[in-house]
Image (tube, rainbow, N blue to C red):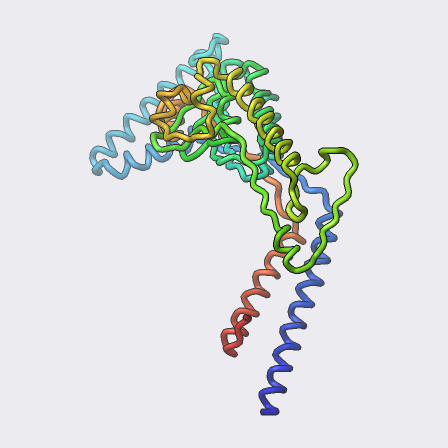
Length: 349
């Protein structure tokens, strides 16, 4: 019995020590990250080249040896003729082929707080520094919506493209609902996969209330405000009918602004019919006028790559050494403690 007591005490000390070490590492890493100014960089991928390489690899795989030799011979002849034509045009000062316009591809996979807008801002700014009216911006959008102010800013970032007279296409392969559709409706052209979810032009707020639970345990909750409607509803206090009415009034006001925003960008929509908070699949969304065509982003970009240079733009913030170390230490510690508890058949709870 004494052995088990000492063993349990030793195990508790070991776990406490490990947790203390983790806490120190996290604190040091956190302090280092605060001092470091995070700086990202643009990652540029030539999607046209990727499409061509994939096509070439597949063709080579399907041809037999004699067919492959014939193709290589024809490719060499074509390259030789092109080089000759380029040389001739260089002497005369003329261009053999007109320069291809660009399609700039941006991905936006939105969270509830739309924190991805910080990267979107950088991507849009970079594109606008080089894009011309004959180019196009293509956004692969995926979001179920979230906070009004976050998605309002994200929509404004896309609106910058429209203000510069650059054609904007938004593609929805999975979902663009609520705030996601607020972003999508900014585009000149919206394409959607058949079973993508669109719409949900409405506003929702959910607030749990623990007032009855607090009263049951004789716990008072005091809240002090200046201004009649500084706080309309609360999680812990007793909500009044007047406060609830004001809260609903604010939701209605947001909904009116949302409907106006969509109507201004897609004036052909029957806004009273589609702004009920409902969502629809792509095929029905087409009938309602929420989208312009049914097509996946893959089909659209592959077709565009025949006539345009398709380039993906992504802004990424590189993780610093302290951040990487902190994450690795946390994972390692969790794994160590898990194995230790499993080996000694000690489980919490």
